[in-house]
Length: 357
Image 1 (spheres, rainbow, N blue to C red):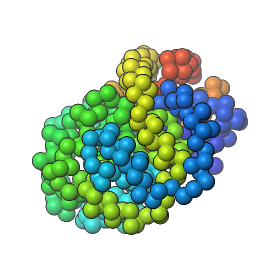
Image 2: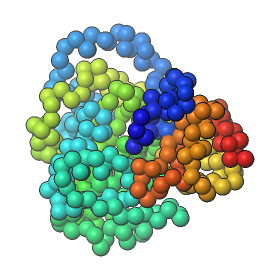
Image 3: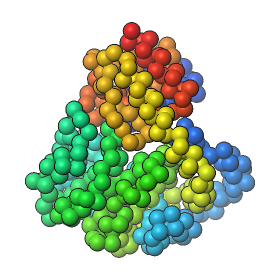
Image 4: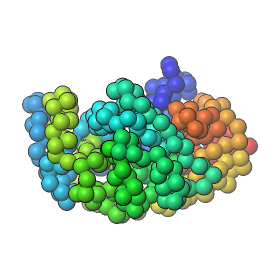
């Protein structure tokens, strides 16, 4: 099978490992190891009838729940079949720009979406020797932004996990024709509202925010995300797409997920110490450099190609790490790992140390 451009391809990894996909421990997809929430199995049994009828094409109940979560009007919310679908419509809007800028290394799906609509795009390379400061970001962007420019930016940044106070740059970002902010991993921060660009929506129609529910709740197979933007823009997107982009089960489940404050608190308590311990353990292995991260994943640089290491981890330990070949600026000496439970992280550390010894 062709090497995947995205994490979480267990069938490809199982073929390389000579094992079943269920035998693998996946560090390549950055999903919450505390999820799905424990109540979900019972909920699915009780609500499977949502699969029988067509969903409400307006998704009123789901939009109202998301709007309460963000303290905004439901008209500013558009649910989607994961963040990926919404990025497709954002790219169609970005096609009105002369050029779209990405901060590289950049999530490969951005290129997919932009290329599909024929919009020219260009990467601005982030320096990876240290976390990019707001001043560094300003220096990269300021000479490039014009009224004909589009910007697709994520915060926290994927794959580095760096977090920026982008609101401080909003006067600069407003030069753009359209800014699309991918905040898919922002829910992993208890202070997410302090970092989101959402307050800037009232100042300009040239901003779209894309969020994901499936990463935080570990439901990647369900596909559920949403966009926050001016209602006129979202109405256009609704006309472009299929009538029922979100399945009935996902639409009914969304409000329940957002109401589970205990799960949210447990995640926020788990992540910082687990991430710190995994980062410290990886940094202690000779030949590895770990970039500091505020997300639920870590980007690691090795002295040599990590492809043999990836293969040995699969075949000898049934562990899957994310290679970074799909990130143009990185190549085969970088890998990314999700933060999982303490026991699982320790299993990964011991396996990597043994294979690099």
